[in-house]
Amino acid sequence: MSVEIFYDDDADLSIIQGRKVAVIGYGSQGHAHALSLRDSGVDVRIGLPEGSKSRAKAEEEGLPVGTPAEVSAEADLIMILAPDTAQRHIYANDIAPNLKDGDAVFFGHGFNIRYGLITVPSNVDVAMVAPKGPGHLVRRQFVDGKGVPALIAVEQDASGTAQALALSYAKGIGGTRAGVIKTTFKEETETDLFGEQAVLCGGASALVQTGFEVLTEAGYAPEVAYFECLHELKLIVDLMYEGGIARMRYSISDTAEFGDLTRGPRVITPGVKEEMRKILGEIQDGTFATEWVNEDDAGRGNYKKLQQEGEQHPIEEVGKKLRGLMSWVDRPITETA
Ligand SMILES: NC(=O)C1=CN([C@@H]2O[C@H](COP(=O)(O)OP(=O)(O)OC[C@H]3O[C@@H](n4cnc5c(N)ncnc54)[C@H](OP(=O)(O)O)[C@@H]3O)[C@@H](O)[C@H]2O)C=CC1
Ligand SMILES: CC[C@](O)(C(C)=O)C(=O)O
Ligand SMILES: [Mg+2]
Ligand SMILES: [Mg+2]
Image (cartoon, rainbow, N blue to C red; front, side, top):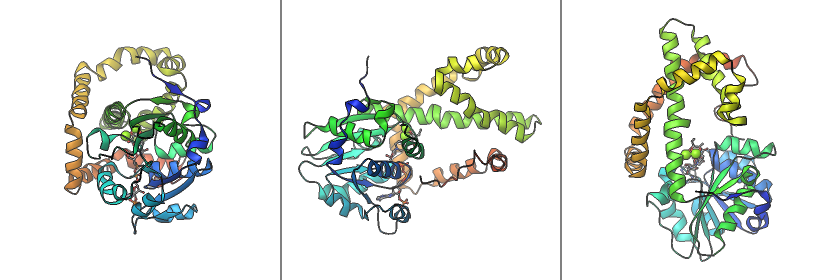
């Protein structure tokens, strides 16, 4: 199945420059979209509740800030970049009552539409611009003249021009510099959740922690284990990013490559692949979405416990010490731009 990929020349920036955009939320994605749209000549305002700790950060950048209801009333394109679990409440209380004919509701991830948590009236466009990267890097790449690839999707095309609008928005945040693929809310949501759970975040974190544990439990120095299992992973992935797994294998020693080819499949066994399929199944049938929404409704007790366990893993302590000695590596966890 071939996909459509759009680049800068396929998108008309003047379309988004002609809209009044409200970005709801000013976190990882929110700050990146808002600042890059503003730098692209777009009229942007930020929606945050009174008392939100993000308000000061948006105000420091000179962005107009109002409550989600105020900015939704003022804008004709509302991009929802608040946490996925909060979006249905924000939509019902603050956005829906302020929607007018011709407005557009945008998302950075399809969760709430895919799982039926938000339904938008048929006179309003519903589209998605979902960068395939963390918000802080979306902003950093934009500032550096580069871009993070993005997916766009149109769920509801009331205006008949929703795709051109989404492409224009994607250009405003640098997505069309790298390539924008047209997809559906269903495909974006399911692949994004799978990627972050099985490979990018869940899979990679567990692989790094487990490798570190095996080495340190066998008596090797934590510093050596940290460099081997975490620090060097970035350098290896940089090569994959530049030229695929083949480029990485070209650069490593033949000893490493023989170990890679013979031992890799012993780590990622058919059982691991089977578990990945189960994880995908739970995403497709809504089990994961229900579990996450219920966890949030119940106060996130299990989430916070697991988060704390992760923060207390010995790899964090040794990593903090070693990164402190590499000024070019250290990035504050609270980076905003
Ligand atoms: N993180 C990422 O890089 C990516 C995220 N996405 C998607 O982008 C969306 C936003 O995620 P992310 O940027 O991680 O979110 P963050 O948690 O980083 O930021 C959320 C923002 O929303 C604000 N907020 C919280 N509650 C409300 C509310 N009731 N009304 C308005 N604003 C509120 C928060 O303010 P406060 O300071 O008060 O908490 C904060 O500014 C999600 O749909 C996510 O799936 C998509 C691609 C990548
Ligand atoms: C990989 C995690 C992600 O999907 C992302 C940065 O793309 C997210 O939801 O944060
Ligand atoms: Mg993602
Ligand atoms: Mg995601």
